[in-house]
Amino acid sequence: MIRAMGRGIAFMPVLATLMWLFACGSAERVGTSPRPRVHAGTGEDAGWPLIITFGDSLSAGYGVEPGEGYPDFLRESLREAGYEYRVRNAGISGDTTGGGLARVESVAGMEPAIVILELGGNDGLRGLPLETTRANLERIITTLKDRGIEVVLAGMKLPPNYGPDYTREFEQLYRDLAAGHGLPLIPFLLEGVAGHPDLMQRDGIHPTAAGNRIVAANVMKTLEPLLLPEGKFN
Image (tube, rainbow, N blue to C red; front, side, top):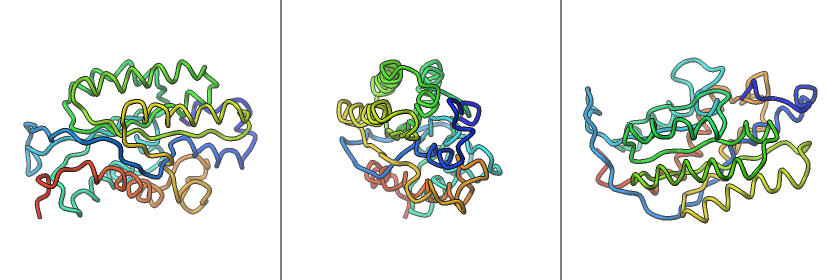
């Protein structure tokens, strides 16, 4: 994401913070979860179903130490709550919906039970046509759902200098996709993080480790209703 900053945002520190409105989310559940799959593996979690965090630098853990991204804290939260699920990070910094579409088959091939889809912020920052972003996300969602994979969608927002019409329509496309496909929606992934300097890195865009812990809690609010009771170990 950091390399995708354009159209004058680098000149505007306040808007740099607002850019973190990309991966937005409070939580709402729509639909039901498929039965968790069983996977071969090693260690105590070898047979546990898989959750994949599929996104850009927000998922990749840009700028923090290994083990301090939101997927790491999500894994920790699942363990603490007694859920037998693995978490695999498929975030790539700077990725777009086009890049996500190019690798969705490889993500689906990992046979996850659930995918947390967090893409589109970089499309918006580059001012890409909204119909392109919508079409790419639609194809990603359809590919995953056709494989019986539950998709949790993280909505995005943009800073206001992109214009009221573009930003409003950009945000709406996530709500439309979630409603149209019956997806659980995280409207604002960075609830309680964006706009808080103590929870953001110096670039004003990426969360610190403490911020990522809050992001994981936001995700858990939407994710937990999808997890089956038989997936618990206590």
